[in-house]
Amino acid sequence: MKKVKIRRIFHPIGQGAFYTEQFDTDEGKLSVVYDCGSLRSGVNKEAMIQTVFKSGDSIDILFISHFDTDHMNFLSDIKKLKIEIKKVVIPLLSSNPIAIKILQVLYPETPNTPDSPNGSNGTFFDNTALKTYLKQFLDKSTEIVTVNPIKKKELSDNDSKIWKSLYAKSESDYISDSNSQIKANESKEKTIESGDVITLTSKKRIDLSGFENRMEIIWKYVPYNFKSDERSKQFIKALKRAGISENCTYDDRTIKKIKKIYASIDGNLNENSMVVFSLPDKREDKFRVNNYYGYSGTNYRKCHSPGCVFMGDFDAKKNLKEGLQQLLNSYYMDKIIGVLQIPHHGSRENYNSELIKPYLFYVISFGNNNQYGHPSCESTSDILKKKGVLILITQCKLFMFTQNICQY
Image 1: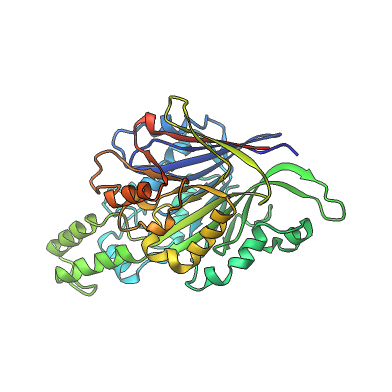
Image 2: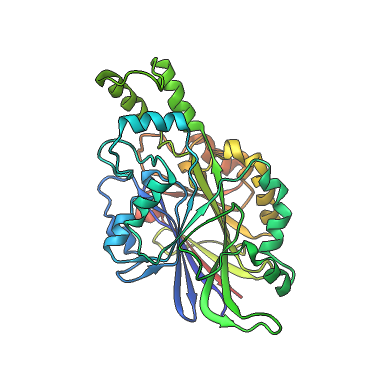
């Protein structure tokens, strides 16, 4: 079996997120993308995409952490470039019904797009509308995988099960526990649970003596869909302060007020954000990781931990204690995780100091002079204080972060 070679890039797109992993295999390259969007004005989206993909290429898995504009508005440009998306993984929505009801009255004709000119700010009112929107950028053969929200007690209760399914002691353990794996040639739409394992496989089948043939597993991804209701709470509280209720009369003056309040919310009201663990197939596999910060080609610092945690806009301040901290510590102790994307562009509202361990890489993506004040000084200073390696990604090409990962 060929040793795994991966190039992971945190791209300089400003206020947004565009992270890629490309795998060198015997059959060619496999590609995985986590989020694909930017709020940077004047950004040439097609040119940014073409730094990684050319027309006719394919993306094997696209993870969309949540449905803010700055995490998904590259989709139309990916379509224009005729880049095939084979599988897209999204969090199942569970939005506040009162907030959504009010927005549905305001925007009855909304096309539910993150670039909607009517000002709906990209809020999708239900999962059906979301999938309808996504399908215009996808091929008929694209598989859409929806991840259920995790329940509060579920993560801590299932830690041992998840660990076993990820790193089984023997091949038979792995196959017997394959009920949590996504199998090929199934329905093009499916729903899985948070913590289920999505495998990236080569086209080559390997013969396991005494077992069924299966695709060669190259890498594993474990998504967790977390619900956060902070934005909806902000919206509802602001409406109450303005004397507006869901049963009010929607005259022109009231509608103008609601739109102004909604525009002041940092992001839309879709309350789900998906954390994804990017992990090697086997715990005992050994890797060398060369890290390059900027275009200079300078080797920033070597390490041997190939795994990564992509956090999107995850509310770490509120949700980290719901079992995720225990799981993170398990990976840290086994030296599997080497880099973690700090959630929500380093916002103090989503930051949790418990994420930080000495000498690991912590990536923050943000736009220079952004209106939200990201990242917060509290977040960056805490990372440095705890001896984490702080990596700042802006729209400047000098701030691109690349990891070349080689198995040995």
